Amino acid sequence: MVFVTTPTNPTTQPTLRLVKSSPLSDVVQPAATTQLPMRTTLQQFNEQAAHINQLAQELESAIADLQTLAVQIQTTQKNWQRAEGRSLNLCELRSVKLPVVRRKNAGRVVVTSRSLPG
Image (cartoon, rainbow, N blue to C red; front, side):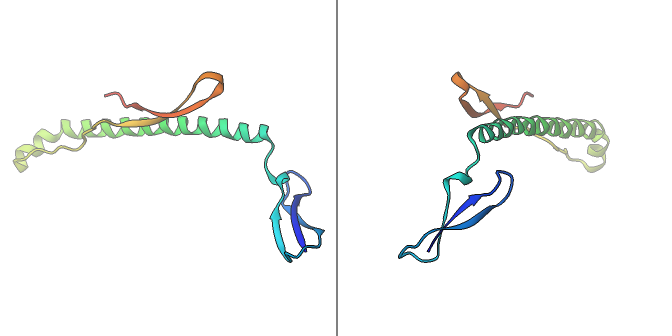
């Protein structure tokens, strides 16, 4: 027997159905119809690209917050240095790069990076 999965409805789980008898008994094969339509897949692709850019913006903001906190601590560091006799280096940024998704010709997408200012 050969079984093929076919969706009964695009929003539901595929079901198995008997296609024909075969020497390969009890073989389950995914049907080509289980793939998402191209339009839906393209929409998901675009949404994922936008999500990556959103996460990069959130990461940039979090890094800026970290820098701000380090500066606040360093302004009070002078008193600590006098008491402890040593320097406190809390935050150093070296060549920080964030991912970015850019559109090129004909809608082609390139995942690259950009340097964090500062």
